[in-house]
Length: 158
Image (cartoon, rainbow, N blue to C red; front, side):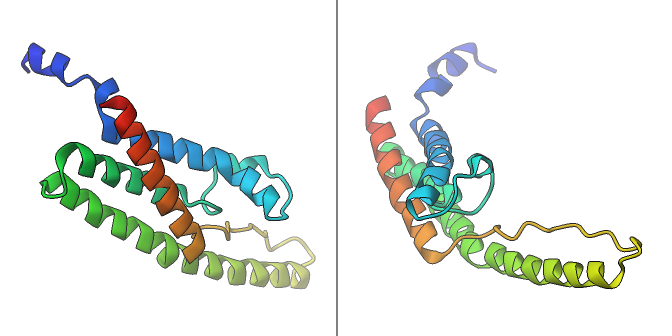
């Protein structure tokens, strides 16, 4: 590999990558505090879990896409790939993962029923995570947050 090429592509100046990481981390950090504002109990596990407001997945891919649009243009192949990737991630967050969470709720209820039936301890109850996906508003909040972070970080870096 050309040593000069490596030096000229310093990762600390990769605005799309940094924007994506900043959006992801910032969205995760905000989740438990937004939950408290919305009337829920503070849960430190929200710093590292999926689900919640805003969607860190949506924020991450939107920041990445926005930064690529600014640095490489909307006509670039990288922008096209990132935009399609963002749509898939956001659709998955609202659809497939949310349905998996609903299924986990049903399975957990059946587990509770089976635990009551098998009081002799033969049945072992394990709870599945039910907060897997996002609501439409959580995805939109992540999209808006990611757009702001992507634009802000990119203009700070370039």
